Length: 168
Image (cartoon, rainbow, N blue to C red):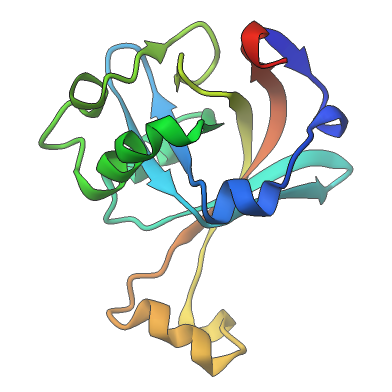
């Protein structure tokens, strides 16, 4: 694995997040979960390189992100699109997503991730806050919360950015 600085990241992060998707993963070797996400971002906050992710409390992964000091976000080549789709439409409460999809978990960092990732960011959780109707300024956005199922925002400091040697 190659380790990069956040300022060495290349590519279109908007496409990676919005259309190629990512996996958010947290937990331990004994018990972890992953979910597909397309909402999030990267930037600078509190003079730190950070990522921010959004997870609804109803999602099984929520309890792992909520109760862990770290989480990972990871990105994949197009050939893994069906695996990511599966991870976004099936609950880890009911199935072993890694077993079904062929994703191979790695536990050598502070948060689990998957061997097949072309890019993994290990994040130290810095901040979290529940979203609410009171915070929505643009009325059009309320369409995403018809059942008051607001996301919780998690901000994580980028501690390590990992790229497999064959992807450098």
